Length: 301
Image 1 (cartoon, one colour):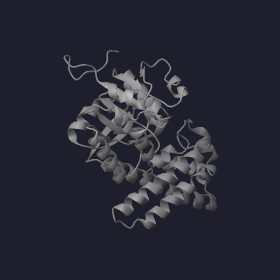
Image 2 (spheres, rainbow, N blue to C red):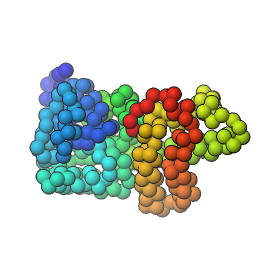
Image 3 (cartoon, rainbow, N blue to C red):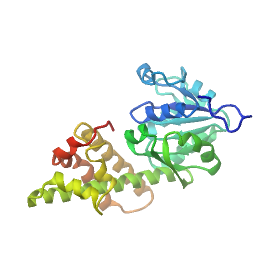
Image 4 (cartoon, one colour):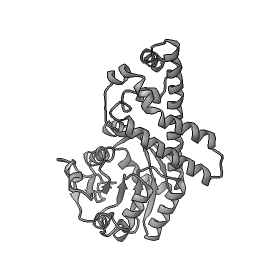
């Protein structure tokens, strides 16, 4: 496929991607399949090998990748990981900041706090680059289906340049406002999902105690007015093989949510405690639903 350009007279858009994990790999693959010129860097050769036959230019350092790209997307675990990538490249090599060209856009697809995202934006601005915080919702299944939701924070012109790239792997792209608002939206999204899981766990526990079959009840609830994304994910992305990992990730997400609420001067203690209970109780909830968990397709988180 011919690399995508803004018009027939423009050069192809060069897109860098760092973070070829469970979610980042299908996102990067989608970018290449959409016709963009894909550039990648990874600390481990095995990560590059996972691209298979996907056309991509491999770079020796993050700085080399940055120097070749118009947009650099990063999908790593934490804000600190991205901060280190900007400065050091994680393994002592030159970081992204050393290679960024004026006007290059750095996109953060990971989950963090609004204040940290604002600081990352300032680092990029000092190097003459622009920054968009664009966490994604949907997990690996949605990434593979090209149906993620992007929650974006950044100036309108930068986001406009990124939209065609995001559209390669996302069904919905929601502009939330300035830098940091994308991260705020993602944290509220995660908190609500986990609170819903806590409510489901309560209902399932009471159902089991009353003699109602929890598996059949969950299937019925999915079809009725109580249906929710949290119910749909049970047995799909949330299954016995993934639940321990997902519960740990959700617990960390609530820590980030608590930090963001504290920084905003809001008392979210009850919500945070309830959400932590939902995250930590997820393995027990899945354990109460053996048939529902076994009957639905299993996919890595």
